[in-house]
Amino acid sequence: MCVCLAAGWSLLGASTCAVLFAISLIPEQGSYPYYIRSVPFGLNATGTVLTAFMVPLCTLIPVPLLIAGRRYLRHSLAGTRRVAAWTVVASAGIVVEALFWYRLYVYVAVFRWLTHSSWHALELSVGFLIVGAAMAGVLLGVPES
Image 1 (cartoon, rainbow, N blue to C red):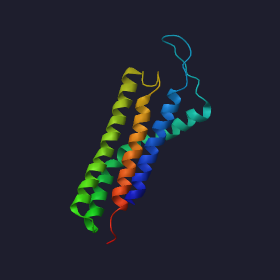
Image 2 (tube, helix red, strand yellow; image 1 turned 180 degrees about the vertical axis):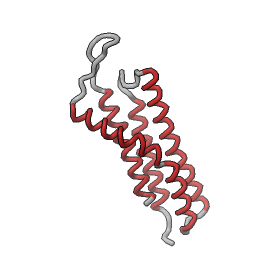
Image 3 (cartoon, rainbow, N blue to C red; image 1 turned 120 degrees about the vertical axis):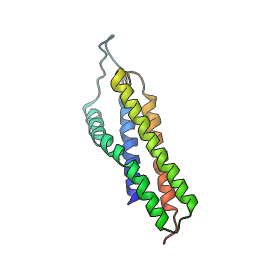
Image 4 (cartoon, rainbow, N blue to C red; image 1 turned 60 degrees about the vertical axis):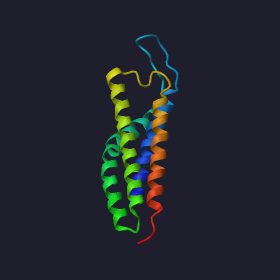
């Protein structure tokens, strides 16, 4: 179950940030302060749906995942190093999510996040994938009890 939650968290966060990055690559038209970006309907709808699911789910998943993963590893044949590795990796997931919320706050407060190519969205997408792969690696490397 923890592997499925980690994979879902990682893929949902990465795909949402990747769509936001793709949207930021579309050139703006117009002049200051009325910039317009003509985003194709399919890309805009995909971004809206992914963001609607990603924001609440990816915010709620990391902390229970940290606790459930620690509980699972303590009851398996995993040693204390694997439990410590899980704590570090799951905490990194919380940090990635906090960075996402910070970038979202900057976007809402300043409203300039996607005005140019948003490399932050690409970095967050890669961060979600790396942390998700590390979570899966820690959980899948546990010997059977």
